[in-house]
Length: 362
Image 1 (cartoon, one colour):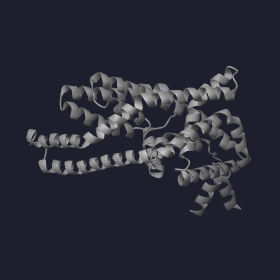
Image 2 (cartoon, one colour):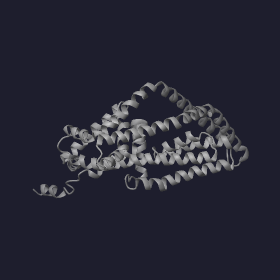
Image 3 (cartoon, one colour):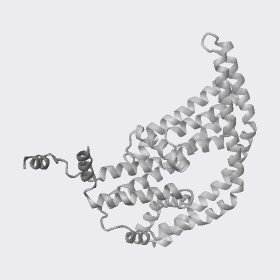
Image 4 (cartoon, helix red, strand yellow):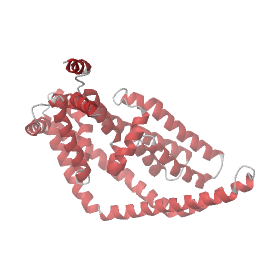
């Protein structure tokens, strides 16, 4: 066993570049784990910088000074955010408050409908078993409603913090974009000279994360916009709120689409009951999800994030358990980083049997 472990260690860590890369990744992971909440504004600014780097670089190619290009792009982005905030957020907020006030009535209506199923289908549904399931489900849904209410109240109390972040984050984005080369050059002082593997992983991850951030932004806008149009045309209540939830849900692979199905179905069931209109709503929602997964995602991402669905689910569970909601949102980039590291890791001394044999002969 000792010889096996020794050979494995020599094969994996004989290259100094690999040891340096492991050290850098360990420091970064420990920083995120222990100081993730404090670094949240920096992470948000970094994501926005990746999102806006493409138009800034395009303007730079047109011989516009980088600082001027950064100012123009950032001002345009802030203007779009303000327009969206003043146009949509009041409606979304009002619909969210109304939905929370009607939440108990929706649960009661849903419970009444479930309670009628044993009478309609006595040979298929056990009434006692259904009552226990409904009781557990009602308790959990009420707990979710209370958590949402507490989160909304706490968000009101944290308006001062949000105001500070609304100033600091754009400033950090500006400096990240305008002084990108200087900042990257300044990091060289803290990285050892044995950085070949780090540079290889960085080049791969830089392109993939940039494509991922821009692709996810486009996916949120398209899925959310299409959902809003469909919900409005169908006359669904809380269309703005639900379409926003559907758009943001694409950030959480697989789990997000499943989680948003519940509020969409509950609102439709409360509004129309079991009717053809409710069936059309569910059908339209399923079509949106199918087109998103099978048409929009391949077009936007292509081979940028080439991960098996099983790896994505495991990444969501692991990183969500480690870092909460931030870990869920960044599960795919982190999984892509792990894949890039594994692909770049040197594999030396693959055949060590001959030296061992020669040593035994001597």
